[in-house]
Image 1 (cartoon, one colour):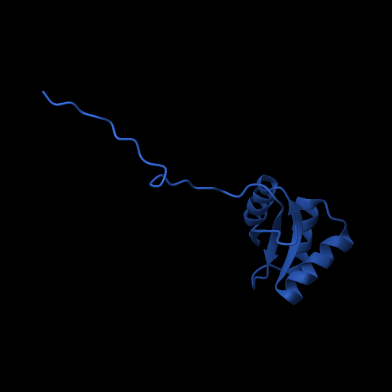
Image 2 (cartoon, one colour):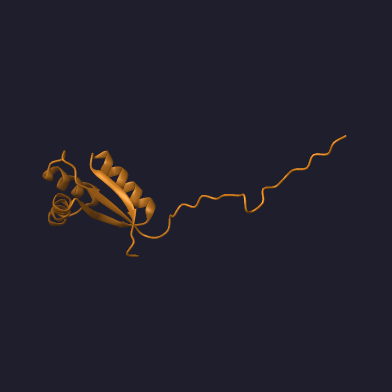
Amino acid sequence: MSTRTKTQPSPETETATVTELSGRWNVVVLNDPVNLMSYVVLVFKKVFAFNDAAARKHMLEVHEQGRSIVWSGEREQAEHYTFTLQHWHLNAVIEPDEAH
């Protein structure tokens, strides 16, 4: 009769995946050759409730600098905004806010 022993993984062999959820995250809109400037202003007003001046400021940053940070905060909300902007066909990504 043989006895079987269960082997437990040692702490050295276990791996863990850690996802950084805390901290601040930026929603960044990147320039693209497809969308009209007026359309980008419209989307910023609808998604973020920006007034006309703020929406135009961010649109011009995207157009002239290639990117604009349109929102900063918790990761879950940043992912939501990014998904929403992508749904409107804007090129948006999230990135950690290195300043905080």
